[in-house]
Length: 324
Image (cartoon, rainbow, N blue to C red; front, side, top):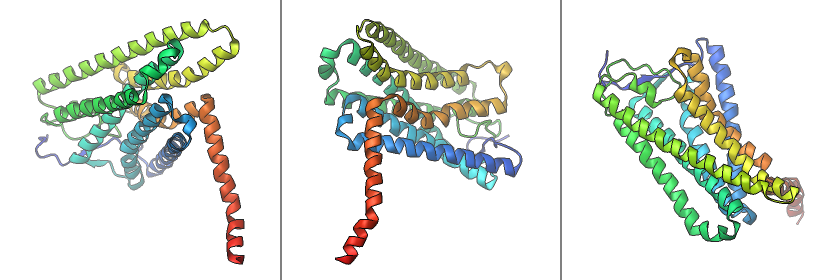
C-alpha cells in the first residue's frame, strides 16, 4: 500500500509477457504512428500551401490534424519506449502530463468536430449566409473556443485526479495514463465522487454536442434530398460523409470504452478498445478526408506531383550548375 505523496512512478499495462511479442507491438505502433504523422503532416502542408483550401472547412481540418498529431504523440512514444526496452514504468509527473495533454487534444478534437458539423450545416442549409456566419474572424473565434474548452477541461480533470490520495498501489490497467484507472487507486471517497461528478458533467456536454450533430445532419440530409440534380446531391454528400465517418469512429470507440458493461471487461479487451480510440483514429482521419474530399485530393495530387517533378529535375539542375 502506498500514499500519493510517496508515489514517484506508475506501472503501465504491458502489451505482452514475451519480449518478442512486445517487439512486434513496437513495430506495429511505430508503423501506425508514422502513418498518422505522415498523413496529418501532408494535410497540414497541403491546406497551408494551397489557397483553394483557405476556406472555413480547410481551416478547421488543419486544426483537426493538429489535434490528431497531438493525441498520438502524447500516448504512443511512451508505449514505444516501454515495448522496446521491456519496461512498464512512467513517472508521476510524466503520467500527469500525459493525462493532461491527452484529454486536452481529445476534448479540443470533439469541439472541432462539432464546429465542423455547424460549418456543413450552414454551407448546405443556409448557403446565402455562409460568408456572414463563417467569416475569418468567426472561424478564428470558434477554433480558439475549441482549444480553450479543451484546455480547461483537461486542466480541471488533471488537477482534481492528481489531488486525490492514492493508496491502492501504483499499477494502472492501461498502456497510458487514463482517469478511470487512476481513480481505482484512490482511497478518498469524497474525492472519488467529486471526480465522478466532473465526468458526469463532461459526459452531458459531450452528449449535448452529439445531439447537436445528429440534429444538424437530419437537417442537412433533408436539404440534400431536396436538391433536384443528382450531381448536386452527390457533391453535397461527398462534403458531409468524411466528417460523419470521423464523428462515428470517434464517438463509437469512446462510448464503447466508457459504457461497456463490467461483465465483459478484461485487461486485453480494455487494451484493444483503448488502441481503437486513442491510436487508430489519428491515422484514419486524414485517410477518410483525403479519399472523400475531392478538393483535398486534387490539392494533394498537385502538391505531390510538384514535389516529384522537382525531385526528378534536381540531378539535371546540379549537372547544369557544375558545367557552368
